[in-house]
Length: 226
Ligand code: ATP
Ligand code: MG
Image 1 (cartoon, helix red, strand yellow):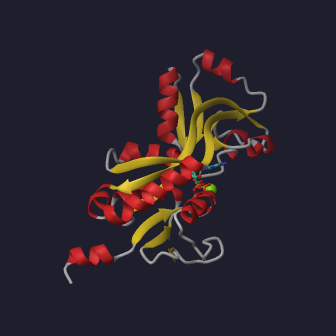
Image 2: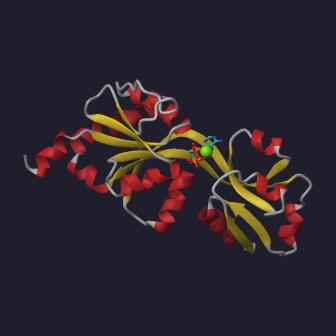
Image 3: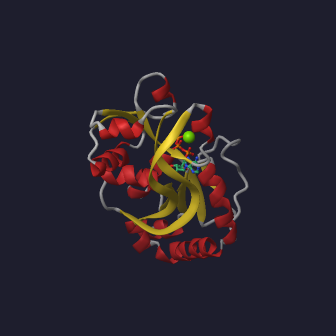
């Protein structure tokens, strides 16, 4: 069998993260007539079959989805704009982003401790210490405002940083604001609306169009119908 033949017969691989993106993708797959019987929260499998023998899922960290797709280990994937923005800064080009799926919606915000006078701190031109997982987005935001910041890279639980004196502010994703309130933080600025996009490997788009395009179309239709 030539490599080209093997390629045509291999199932398409869709990269997803577990949690909200997986859950909100299931209805889109169902709209395309595809069911997933295993739940990545309870199963430990990282490769999940679907009811369509031509499609399998791989479960990876949210921030790793663009990497799997860019290198072609997955033909396509679903990732938040937050993740895509950070990825693009390191790996410009390379990912085709045909559809905003309008799922996993939230916003990227600046938040500070309750009682911290953010406007005054910014107005005085003092250097702000900002902790975040979203270093690129934060750098661009504060540069646009002309605010000097020292960025501190964190990998999670950003809410803690202002409470223990690691930072004056955080840049984090917020949906209801419940986590901020529970930690006596308040949102002071919105940086961007976030939702998840379908991303497609450039080579797969050409060589596997016959299998890929119907799925891309079904996702687009399911998104428009919502
Ligand atoms: P990991 O837990 O692997 O470090 P993560 O915390 O970024 O990664 P999730 O919390 O599952 O992973 O978030 C995945 C994506 O869902 C994010 O990249 C973002 O686009 C979106 N998201 C994050 N937080 C929210 C939220 N509160 N509401 C809606 N969507 C969100
Ligand atoms: Mg998480």
